[in-house]
Length: 393
Image (cartoon, rainbow, N blue to C red):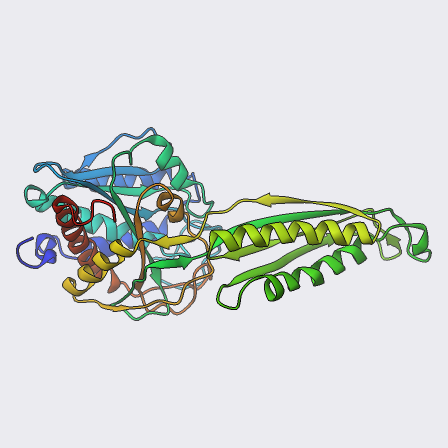
């Protein structure tokens, strides 16, 4: 690409994309409910004459630039959904929808990708291939990536890229690493069936609360005694429901929580041991129980060759690349990576709170930084893939 990649949007200025972000922030929509967001994104793309790729999705937008010169196809993804959170930022452009908020910065992701689409559209004749823009719904429900893949719009895509804002990184820095970056995020529901009785005569029943307590304690040994110190995993019981009266031993206890792992082999091992613990404890205490798994996204595992391209793009965009600490949060971008080589990065946004907090904010100076990164990365990746240097990243 000739000149600085941001020159291509200098006539509109970054203020346009800041205002887009603020508009989205004021009108958040939950997963698979992003109808007005979808309509707005289509309108902004139409303003720049950017082609829409019809995918048959109820919400979300796929668009593309390029194709003037033959070459590979790459994809860049941004998520567009919000969270069921009551905003407490006090911003002048705070959410106008009670109980809904862009508390994870997906409005920032969307505005940044639109900026990159505008920039790349103005250089369309120079691109050595095609860039497909994925404005994905339902990331927070870990459903959207699969919906996009099933639509077929990513068939033939040779590499896919995504980013997430990172509040603890300053603006001007970007976290890039190969290998594990974010965790598999599985949920569980354990139902323990006992036998009710009067609380004064527990020997007449089978106490599911005592069983549940032993299960919770025993689960803590899985990570400490089954997972290598060179690996990592988290098991958290976050809910325990049982009983209706102070003098009655109930029939049932229900546990819920989450398991986070960064390696598929460790993931399988932990889930297997979890079921064994539940079966063993319930059997030993005369109760019965079962586990219902809520399968979340797999771990985000970055391709090594694409991570190197990311480092080159960061340098070209004037960003300081750092090696980020992997996050135990989940991200359904990993679903794409199971079928397409992919790279997911953390963009520094100097926020005051972590993701999903009602006072979550970010520094909008990161919008130009993100646009710079995407435009440089698109150019570098297309050239590498066209030359065969990244045919099989």
